[in-house]
Length: 584
Image 1: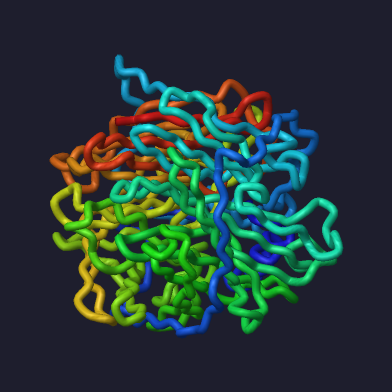
Image 2: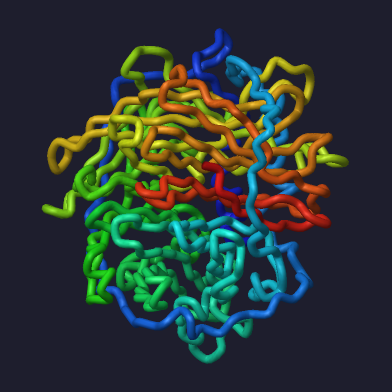
């Protein structure tokens, strides 16, 4: 959940961009005749090494943590969505952007006798989101093993059995991580934590969680408190309950006067990585992306750690742009196939791409794949926008907001960042990173339905050759979108050991309440195709929330069980509830 003033800051940046152009949206697998995308020689990427202080660690038993008792939400209006802002106006304009590229073919729901079973997870309440007495959106964290299902939503965690029996929690974030009280009770509502992420490591059997804490007047929380930005990271053995908790200072000991937003969290065999979009404590405007890398084995045993940090991640070609939302990947391989490095990936977003496209009117293209080498502490990266087998670069632009019954363009669809945690896997026979992002797609409709929210998904084959050289090429990419005004948004990917690829996403239209769907493909399917679209959970009502998500989640239980689980939200009585399901 982004902070209110933080979203104002984002809108301020977007407003600056709007001085040059109005926002728009669209994306294609192959560029249509009316798409305008500038291309140039491959951009160069850079980052700045920084010094980070040692983390603070403590150990608790998760089974002894106090549980919250659910109470109905008394206030869930805290939101980052600005219906009267230039950003909202730009999102509305996106639905008729004449530069929006067209998709190849619209998706359709599959008629199938199979039934996707699952269970309800946490729902909005005054105790699940106590800071505001209820909140929007839920955000989503999910980590699943053959025996346990861990879910995080906004400011709480809970652990279930695979059948949905509640085993632990819900536990509020401040209790989960043992966050100390704020000095002098400077914020009576307590510490502000949000944006949970989680993963399960099938090689060790440990679960991991991460959540951001921020206190800053520019962020609209803890306005009387000292400026604070902490990454809380924990690993736990659910069977024993032992949990090692670490606090990482994103201000780098005070040398950075900015706070982190939008939790991004991943791992490899030897490294845990987390990144944040850093916003200035005074102005509230975006400064740079910061990434920290930590010794995973030391954290598994609760030992002292000092992260390796980098700031100011940048891409340069025709122009230089600061990148944001640099997502660490989950490395879902056995030890023998571990790449030995921590991969990260980003698309381009509010500052456009380095070839001069703004991501608002003109489609951006390309991705940066980064690799951190723990053997020498270096971070390198490579830009890719090309396919191994040829084909045009897949473009992406800011999508319009989604329709729901009784309201057009009322459900938020975010921007062109990669939202769900990307996954590194060799299930398809080659080492690939799977990802998705929101984009507009011209679906051939008329009027306001001509451009709809859709999903660009893809897989990038990647190799790491030295401390600074990363080779990356797009193996396949495609667009999932619907006809009419139906929207697809907030996708999250997972691949199993057979190369089957799954994408959970949200969907709604003027005749469909906000709902959850799943799409999938087999390794033998034609490249660029994903289908078998099924409902996971249909929403029984429209939502009154103006925010609908920052991201959804998918998880893998490991190589012996080989199951994929997903978590997303649907609308009940105008507010959000969550649903967790095994889809393979």
